[in-house]
Picture 1 (cartoon, rainbow, N blue to C red):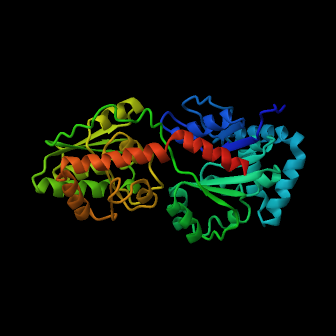
Picture 2: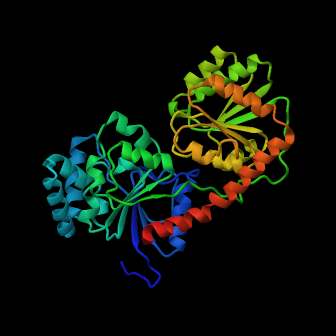
Picture 3: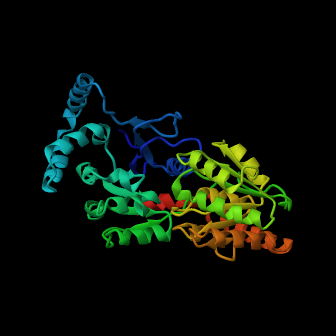
Length: 397
């Protein structure tokens, strides 16, 4: 590759899949780095949405048919022959770590396109993607960066203790999205072996903005959540809280935007809690439709039991909604207690119901004060341009 005078470095970003239409975090990051003069290549297993913001290289997939798999293995290994020096370094590092030959050969196959690249930095977009690949950057004679966002450090190490023990001594730089996520690194064995840099998620504050004064419709109160229907999001606790709210005679409508594995269970919970008339499951919607529903809502709820940060809460605040969230990881940094919104202890439906009732009963001027403070903070601290500058600095130092 011929480098231009504006070239700052070649970055390989490894994700499980190319960013989809709603994954603005990665899209904005890639766009900003390109504008700053970095050269990027994205490695992933699939590109269903036709991502084209930078070159995309698909990783080889396993084949169920043994004959086809054998042919693919031979073809991929032959393609690696011109990169024998890189392969030798990788194998030596792996064998020094006590790895057996079978997992080494498997890694050479599954990540063959990466070994062919001339990179200055190999960045794993999630911590779990770096597992088994700890020596890859060193084999390429590149720096190794890893991002930790939520599940990969908040949940995965609980099921797989010491899973990152080999990573800590090999990573060059770590990116986290909140202070709580950083603290979890130490919980799971990190001891300052590499710099840790916090870069929070960001949103397009020009797109997600209240175009007019937020009009509060008191009856029924409009509540909303944008989230994957997953146990981490605590939607079952939210529904229990809303059932208590209904018992107090408060009229409301609650819309949930998103899909996921817990949809059937949550709909059955609505039936058992008597919330069929109040709760609406809207499925997956485009950004424009999400914005329309936010414009019609007054209160945003994110009562997760585990959460890295949550862009949807940023968008809701920028749109002028009153936000109540749980104290799970980054949410308490996303919303400032009694300043820009409310942070409620997780797994406590009664406390959430009481807090929602308090918010509903606030005087109009108090509600507007919370909205104004939240909007101002989002615009100042969580704009995409701010995030892009932070990543530019991340790769330059």
